[in-house]
Length: 84
Image: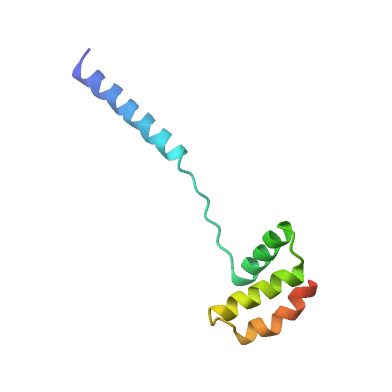
């Protein structure tokens, strides 16, 4: 077998290894704005058996715990409890 053929085979094997490694390491990145994120969190927690009101109260406590309560959150948390 010629040197060129051996290099070609080695290159194909390397490409196959790279392809295999990359295919096993797939991740999906999703970008959301804050409103979409809050909707997503509410949906996840509701699927875990919590009511909408419980989830909003949980978020409120979490934000307060981290000193992250904003005036916007205070305005929207009550409508979020009812799904309006």
